[in-house]
Amino acid sequence: MFAHLFQTPQEPQKSFYVADQGVDAWGQLTPLASTFDHVDHVFYFTMWMCVFFFVLIAAVLGWSVLKYRRVRFDQPAASNVTHNTPLEVVWTVIPLILVMIIFAWGWKGSLDMAVAPQDARNYKATAAQWSWTFRYHNDPGSSLNELWLEVDKPAAFTLESKDVLHAFFIPSMRCKRDVVPGRNQRIWFTPTRLGDYHLFCAEYCGKDHSLMYAKVHVVTAEQYGKRPWDTEDPDPKVNGQRTYEALCKSCHAVAGPNTAIAPSWFGLYGKSEAVIEGGQEKTITVDDAYLIESIRNPSAKIVKGYESAGRMSPFDQGQVSDRKLGFIIEYIKSLK
Ligand code: CUA
Image (cartoon, rainbow, N blue to C red):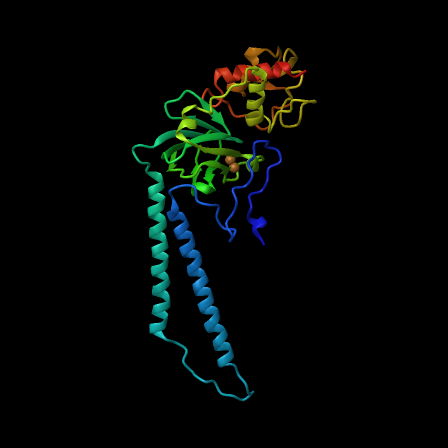
């Protein structure tokens, strides 16, 4: 009845968004799709323990209130006992033991999640405001906001951040780890069910945090062997537009004039632009070299009027290869 409250929010801006994976009848957890069932065990152990003690304590309390209530105004107290040491020891030691069990269970699970098995396939996930880039074991290809994994094959991730704190969270896989700038975090899991899953950023990271989303495809070995992440449209503009939508759309408009956040790409190519370079104002013509520099090293030339706007992060080869950069330029050329 309340299941809709627990469903993942829909994202109207992302056309590739998949329908929800379904929640179970209690509205608590998405169906498990990895080998990390210990997460569910700790979760349900904690939940049922709380239910048990809630019912027990509420029942004893209610029964005492009824049984020992004052029925006459001048009725004396039934007992003057204020203290019971054995009872207090019991209700301190039992919860302590239970909490230590939960701690040990969770601690072991957390360690298990950090140390990947030898035969795991390695991936690198790069988080940046506001996208995910994935690179594949011994493969030149990469993918943006979409990830392909082989079913029943352990997948180990190195997590890297280009800017601020993010978090790598795939609820169906029961895996979540902070992505910390300047530090390579590790996490792994073995996907056990074919299908599409959500990957969320679970750490507030700025304006478009809620749109920082990737789709995880768990496919068969045969499908994985076809390297589905390495797809390119014959039209360079279409490829450029895909990269734009994944990486640039949050700030740059492609129709209409400049916004307060960033210059528009509409009619940009070939235009004369007033920029600030090293404190000096100059006028340049927007060409390939300028666009490449603006993506690889955005602070080199700042468009006049944006001196005090938020700075764009540089995009390196890992996120935007030279080939992809060429596609973006073709796309910009087409916007007029
Ligand atoms: Cu990245 Cu929130």
